[in-house]
Each structure stands twice: as C-alpha cells, then as structure tokens.
Image (cartoon, rainbow, N blue to C red):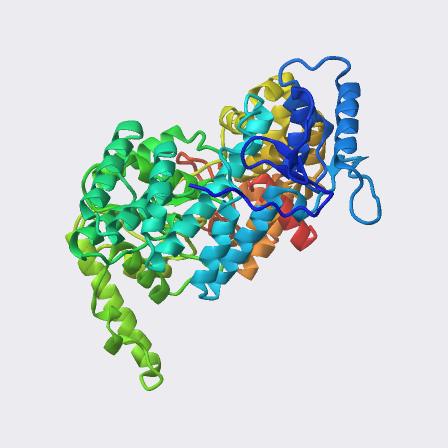
Length: 620
C-alpha cells in the first residue's frame, strides 16, 4: 500500500517517526530509544509537538494504574534522556524540552517529525484540490501517505494514553487516504486505489467513506458486480452489527451504479445524511432522555403521516435526540432519513429555496426546478426566483407523496421557515427541532426537553472525565452539573474542559461555576462556547422580550417566580404580565409546570445560564 517514506530531516538532525512503530534515525541509522517507559514518555511528547504536555498526562501514559511515589523523579530522568537524544533546537541552541507551568514542551520542526510533515502535505493537497488542481492534489496527498508505515505507534499501544493518541493519528491517515482515493477516481485512475482500499476496508469495515471509495474504484474499473457486492456486504454487516441500514447517501450511490453504467458519484457529505456516518449534535455519546426518546419512537414509528416538534433552549440536546431517534427508526423509513439545518452557521435563517435545493440533492428529487429554463435569470428577476422556488416546492411535494422517509428539519427559527416543506400527502414524517414552541404549526406532536435530571447529567459528565474521577468527589460533581442548570451542552463543555485540565480538582471548578460573574467564562472548551450558543438564542428574542427576560432573570435566582412577582418586577398590570411571561414560554426562554395549574399558582423558571447571560446584557 505504501512506498518507503522519503526522509526530510537535514544532515545531522534526528528524524522521528510515529506513523508506524516509534523510531528515531540519524543520517539513515536507527537510534536506540532506551527502555519502554522512556519510549512512552518520548512518544507522548512527540504526539503533542510544540505543545505543553501536563505531567499528569505523562504519568498516566507510563503508569496508568498505580504510579510510584518516585514517578515525578523518574519522569525527570526520562525527559533528561530525551534531551540528550534530541540535542539543541535550531541555530540558537535552545533546549529541545522545556518545563513550564503547563508541563513539558518539546520543540521540533516539521522536517524532524513525520506527523508534522504529514499534516503539512495533507493541507497542501486539499488546498490544491480546492483550486481545481487535481493532479497536484493527488501527488501531495500520495506523498503524505508515503510517510504512513502502518498503525501509528503500534509497538506502544498497550498504554491507554498512547493508544488514544495513536487512534487520532490513524483517523487522520484514513481521512487523507480517502481524500487521495477520491481524487484519483476523479482523475480517471481508479485502478491505483483499488487494492489499498480493499485492505483498509477489511481493517475498518464500518467506515462508510472508505467503502464508498472502494465501490467507486471497482465500478470505474469496469468491475460492476464486485462493486455491488461490496454494498451488499456492507448492508448485511450494518444490519447484523448495528441494526441499521446504510445511509441514504450510500444507498443513492448504489442505485446510481445499478442504472448509470460507469458514471461515478460521491455520496453526499455525511453531515447531511441521518445515517451511521452522520455526526451527532454533541461530541459525547447520547445520554438520558429515555421518556422523550420513547415518545418519539412511538409516534414516528406508528406508520402514519406525522409531524413532531422537539423544543428546548439552545444547548438542550434537541439535535442529538432527533438524530438518535432517526438512527433507531431506520427500518420504518425504507426510503431514507435526511437531515437539513434550517439556519446558517451565523444563526440566520436560510431561505426556502436553499432548503428545498438541499433536500432535492439529498433525496435525488428531479423536478422542473432543476432545469435551466426554470432558474432565475437577470431578465426574470424576482419573478424568476419565485417561479423556480415554486417548482422546487412542487417537486419536493411530489417526492414526499411517493416515498416513505423521515425528514429532520434541524434548528428551525420560526413557523414560516418550514410551512411549505411539510408533506401534504403520503407517508413521509417530519421531525422538527426548534428553540421556540412553534405554536403556529398544527396539528403536530410536541416533545419539550427539560433540564437533565441530576443522575443523567452526572452520567454524561462521567463519560467525559471518567467514572473514577467522578466517584472521587461526587458532591463536587453534583455541584458542577447543577451549576450548569442541567443543560446538556454546559455539562458536556464542563466535562471536556475537565478532561484537559486533569490537575483541576472538581471542587475548585464547582466553585468557579457557582460564581455568577465567572460561570459563563468557565464554560468554554476549544471552539465550543456556551455563551456563544446562548447568545444565538438571545438574538431570536424580540427587543421587548429581551427586556422582560432581563427583569425576570433577577427573580429566578432563588428557584423561580410567581405571576405576582413578575407583575411587580415588570411594573405592569396582571394581564400584560401574563402575556409577557407566556411570550417567553413560547420562545423557550421561560419554563412552566408540566401539568395544568392556574397562572397565579404556577412557578415559572428562567434557566440559570440564560439568566446569567440576561444579567450581562441588560445590566439587571
């Protein structure tokens, strides 16, 4: 599958390789790396080049169960040996390995480490593909793959910490291989990728993109029967191992091979299909919501035409629940399950023509809207746009009338965004997620997502930080999830942050979250920010609702507020206060009792983190 890698280290410099067994070479000669524990320390430092590695991470890599009392001193010995092996960095003679407050940092250049070189070549190859230079892209991606000598760090994977880093490296290699194979297929050279793809599919049988590329390479090489057999094997494997069908994108690729000779097609991006390759809304495994999930499965699985609205505040886990239900309902919707986001990345609503066009691409809708004569033109102006959109809508309705599919319309801002998309006939079902209640849609089945129960929130936190750490201080863990208000996104971000800050005691982090002025600043992990998600929901509110929410947030600090207290805080009459509170309930910004109760007896609540954000914005 690979050729001997081209080493790029300058003469006299040590060249390290992680894409295979851990090795170090100097002028072509392999160097001894010492005992196993010393190699584990070196591998962990090289896996995070030019980045501080906490001492606890190094300790766990070497002694995962019971580190000795001399662990830190032993680490210093191993790091000293690494310094000797590496020598000085660059022309300035700086230390290669330095110790600071964040841990040990290893300085290393691209030409001295195969993973850095690999990443540089992969980025260059993708950039070339983006410019349309497919030949250049194939060459650069192949050069990156030539550095791959086998499973990364395969000689040290009995260490859980090293195995985790190795798994990430292998996933990067597989993605680049898929990029390269698809590029070669587009260039009309499928035969060069066939054997390598077969080998990788045998090692990663459930990786759908690999299997799709293998199907395409066989098909383009004139081996149609083998390509179709690859799909059939995959379908049986999915049913046997996961109880699922291949994604709609994979099924569409199969159908195209049945009816279109040797024309190759890439499956639609996995993020647009609700299938085994689709990513969940959150990075953690789906947790909790047994009652709501059971409700969705019963309603959507009954075989009748249905529209279901799942509502809840930003970060409540609506998309994760919808995707989970869609996966479990595969057998009830033989014509597929598709997911389309109704907002853009910046939170603004997409127009109906955009959404219809994406639905058409995902489901293979071929209507008059797709023909050149019905697209908008400079001469047609706005009238042409309306005509094209109407044609798209008609084609979409016709498709729904003939098929039995589940359509997930995710993150819907208002009723107008989806009214023309709902099926008027046939057996298609639509699952809508929205922050607000979308009261103007009827008849629909409604599922409201409350905050996670303490046990569910603790289970989610434990999946991210480890059950042992959770058990070490259960009281602090409970304070953390309650300070998060039971909001799944906030619990997840807390877990991700604590998983990185392994030195941080849970009690100290709980203290930070308990501080109203600092809580939202603490709920950030990488590019995931609870404040950013809440801000998006804040923008959905009308100006008057924002002012009301700011006033009511102050009342909710002691656990909730009554209508009488709301009337006093808003300085208005009772009827106006009722309308103001119910407007926020409709928008998903205030929660009310689940059972029937009079407006005066009800206890209303503002979710804690939303209340903190309202304080920030309104200065209450």
